[in-house]
Amino acid sequence: MIYGFSFEYPTDCKIEFNPKFKREEGDVALKWPQNLTLFVSWGRLERLKKSMTLEDHANFSLDRIKKSVQGKISTIERKETEVQGHKSLFNHVRVEVPRRGIFGGKSQYHEIRSLHLHCEQSLRYFVIYSTTTIEKSEQQGATVSSVIDSFKCH
Image (tube, rainbow, N blue to C red; front, side):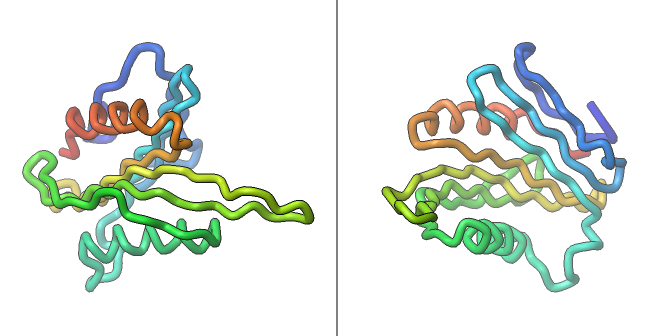
């Protein structure tokens, strides 16, 4: 448990905290020996625009990804779920990242799983997310699910 929230993770996992993190906002990276990384980010709920709903927040995050890679995003799964009594939004998307440069080449594909959660009790939002290659997608899915299933936001 840290700053009033918690989740379970395997003992072989390395944890890296952002040195600037604090109770109100921050992020932590969980790194597995199998080259999988999962992030848990949090911030003050009041920082989100008053009109930004959970859906808006998730869409904003996906739009930022699309702009940063300048690629195509296709939705594999999108569902409302409940985490510790809160409505949350889970997304699983595939991102086509075009090759750049003189030689071009085939695009690369990555899969991103994310969960957005707004917690009124702790006055924070949380985002749990992971990016991986298609080859490690199944392993990533199990990893993300285990962290989400054990997540306690307050």
